[in-house]
Length: 427
Ligand SMILES: Cc1cc2nc3c(=O)[nH]c(=O)nc-3n(C[C@H](O)[C@H](O)[C@H](O)COP(=O)(O)O)c2cc1C
Image 1: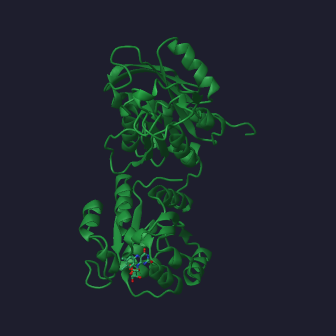
Image 2: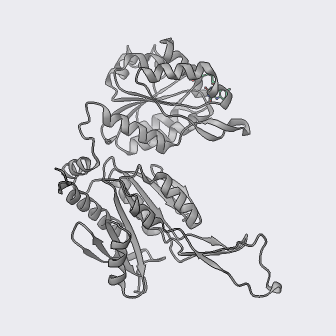
Image 3: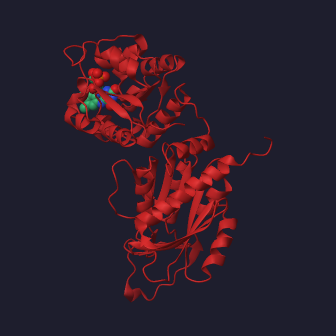
């Protein structure tokens, strides 16, 4: 895969309810360093305003074949593009593109470009399943157009079914993958990418998919109460912001109600099981996973259906161990992925951490002694030791959590470089 930095991307937006989601895509691409030219169909302006796209992309939106600021906008846009991404793509656009019916700017750009094309259909289930739509998509796929299939879910008008625009993570992930296949991009392997990125920008995580977890999980005991912990999520959020700052595509799975940059894909969860499911469904695509969340070790076996009352006596809770997310990730870690765990300890800090580093098969373990003043939970400051399986251990004295995040991500970069320079067996 490659980075969006410096890539010229035409973002085509069609007239469907999902047009508003193209705003988030535009924002994320721009934040990741892409030059985005937005081409809106006339219908799309019934759904979203062009001023938003102009402001985000820092250039006026393109929408007409004629009377634009360029005499022949379709060829200029099409020829200059590294990638054309259409999201959402309507049934109308798919049909026009498949048949070459080029009556508006977007279909002209699609025919005029030699760049790879990714289209992301979104429509009601009946339309999506219609043979004409499926046949048109087959034609396009045969011609090498990349299709990001819609998902199941809530549709306009309260209906539920397939046809909902794919998530921005899936769309941007596919766009990155497709860009990495094009001849302009000459890196194909995670390790190569890490080395090249590090050579170009020390400490950079440009183009890498970084998954971060944050906050303490909450295990319900009845509809209004839960067993939780003191983790505020500040360290995890600082890590996500720092990774974004270094050019990564960031997904943050969090229990904390802390505002994040718009370019971060934030997923809200509450329990250890929800965090497990959210992490595992995204882990394979991640180049770096930083498990900063404080995940409960035990959860009540029974959750009372109604609020527990004092008059019913003192409740006794049977607990069961929760799923071990870090161990699950360590046991199925894909080649080239860097896994970072966090350990909050109150005694035998170093020994416990060393054991965890080995047992859970993580590359880096960030350990803090949460019994020390100003350290860890709820504070804005932290003091950590960063233990690494492949690079030098490092102690970060008491400092703000963003600086700790920077030190952790420096360790990630060093570890990836060290791992990339070790020849694998058979070489
Ligand atoms: C409220 C509303 C929602 C619509 N949503 C979709 C949609 O999600 N997908 C789709 O293919 N067409 C949808 N349509 C129909 C398109 O807007 C219509 O086919 C239009 O001609 C598409 O134009 P365009 O492809 O040039 O953007 C919708 C129409 C309306 C009125």
